[in-house]
Image 1 (cartoon, rainbow, N blue to C red):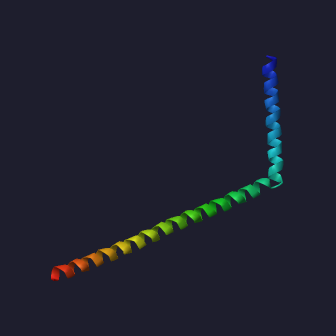
Image 2: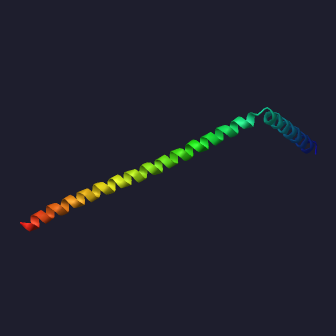
Image 3: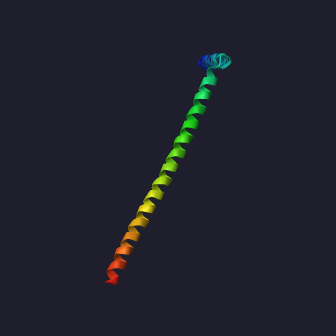
Length: 84
């Protein structure tokens, strides 16, 4: 029984201490800088993802135009051979 009482007391003291330290850190503005850093990280990540998507779309358009050019070149070559 003594061990249970001692454990409950120590956990309660640790919880109260942690709550007090959290309150002091909040009042001093420590969490504001963390929040700002997380917002900046989210913004940069969103921007990088958007850039990656745009790069992918540009690459697809480039490959499509290359394929259309090659197909047209082959068609012209085939048409020239069939006319002979």
